[in-house]
Amino acid sequence: MATKAIVGEKLGMTQVWKDDKVVPVTVLKVTPCRVVQVKRPEIDGYSAVQVTFGSQKESRLIKPQLGAFDKAGVEPGKKLVELRLDDVSEFEVGQEIGADVLEDGELVDVTAVSKGQGFTGVMKRHNFKGQRASHGAHRVHRMPGSVGQCATPARIFKGKKMAGRSGNQKTTTQNLLVVEANAEENIVLVKGAVPGPRGATVLVRDAIKGGK
Image 1 (cartoon, one colour):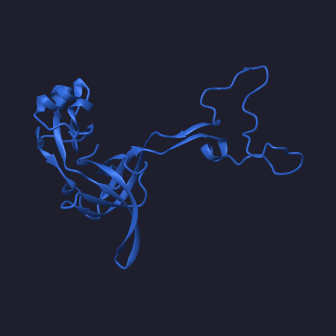
Image 2 (cartoon, one colour):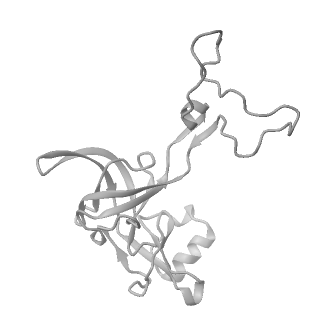
Image 3 (cartoon, helix red, strand yellow):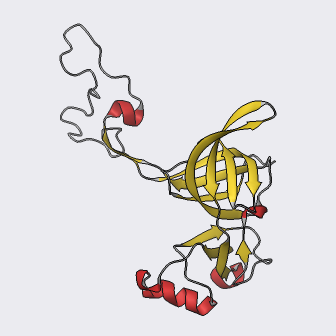
């Protein structure tokens, strides 16, 4: 499990110069998060920190969210996000978490909801080869081919790779390098691509597998 985490917003991609090399980076806007609730193993069964960020009108929030903000005495934010952490002893309600929790050169895991691709075929969705382009093949070049058996069992098994909706699911990209963490401008530059469209809410935490 992670030891530190932060919630941000994906602004887009650009490139920066680092050690005389051009590095493609994703720009994340990391607005300081306010701690709404601290969950501890002895009470809740697990350790986590519930945070919010930004500001939101009370009329746009549901009553359970308003109750959580009122109980904590925290200004209402856009969303309530839970950060699963190993140790939450240093956190308290009302505390702010900023971009300074990350360090330059650190490896992180970034989680977000990927872009929805709509209904796609098996070649795009599962990287199928497709049918042959000659010898009698007629308008079946992107078809999956046979998907079942004959009389027994006379059905298609669950989990069969077929055409369908792709994307729009929770995705984690591991071991991305933090090129720059600017706490003054609330900006974090991460090397490479990050799941989700512009404006997506992303969760950044220290890498579980990579370390430093």
